[in-house]
Length: 132
Image (cartoon, rainbow, N blue to C red; front, side):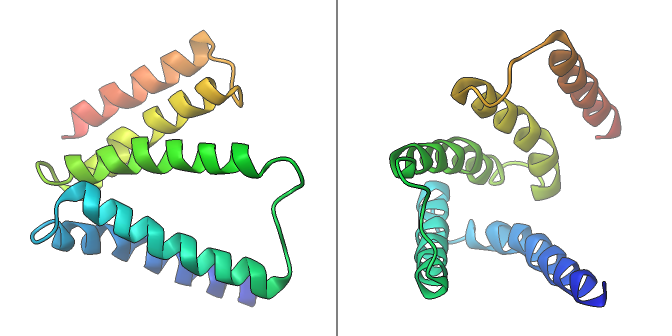
């Protein structure tokens, strides 16, 4: 239990600091270049960890996994990095991620859009407008 809490705390710290690092990086680097550099570095680290653990992609899914990863990272985080030039990082994160991830899940067939999804996204968006 303590180990899980420690992992959660470290993950939360890294996740939270990411947004500050992005905001600082945007002062000197164009948004899409910064996003590309971040995810190329991350991909290299993850590929090294996967090889070190002796793991691999499920047979026959490598292409689909790569395409999904490119869609998620390019669309959601590319737009997020671009948007962070103009508005506070927390607002960008709250506003874009749920909408874009749902759109990608629907596009890839992972989710079937329903009126409940649309209602939840609309209510969440209205709530954000009310907060900010």
